[in-house]
Image (cartoon, rainbow, N blue to C red; front, side, top):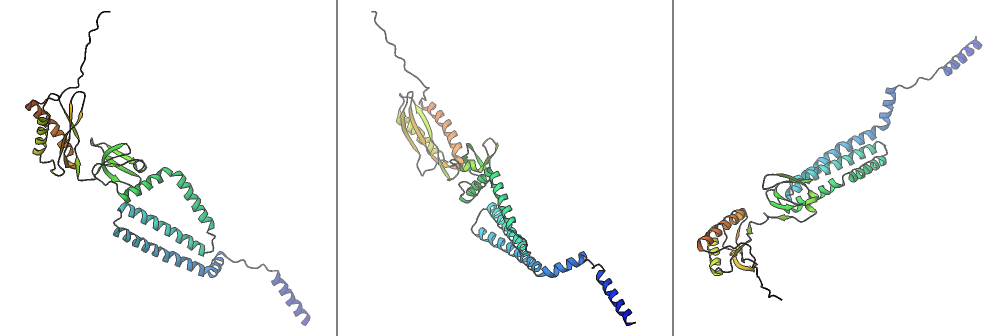
Length: 293
């Protein structure tokens, strides 16, 4: 009996050893993974949550500082969005790295993508840099009449990449900012006053003092002409057909063209009434009689 019991026990041990081991299920693997990496996952979540909160606070402080410096709202929005996006990207990479994932490849891919985008957008980046300079240094503002990039018109909008202008005949022009910054900029509206430069010619046979007095009286009678600086009326050139006067009154910028047009008409009418002539272009022809040989 004892021998039979020992033989039975040995048979059971052999059968137990030969039985297949139960494989862990997916749930068991997840539980084991969570137990093993729980601290790393928790740390990554903390980095993500706290980091996003700090990024939001840093963005708000940055915007507040730029507003105190009275930076253009267009630049404030762009710079703050760029800063926030960079911070969020850094936080996400840090959280992924905390989980044990190698982030070197991520950084390399991001750097390569940035280089590729920069090369593809060279023209746009040039326009962007020029737009930032235009907004920061403000060589002109909306409403100014400027000459830049081979065009002339009133500035309607200054954007990050382009500047919109409107010509005097109401044509819309959109200029790349690099074209504006790449050449000279003439801001006609930069100062509140302007000098009107005109040339009036009279005949050589007319009384120059009389002609000068007529023009001075016309300027004195026009309330739009400023008294200081005083207008200039002086002989500037002895031309082929006329004695030329320069007429240079100072006016408010808004009155520039009206004064120029009105004076041109008034001086012609006054000269006609006073017998002062404005000569046509002319030449003297001299004939010589050659003697017979």
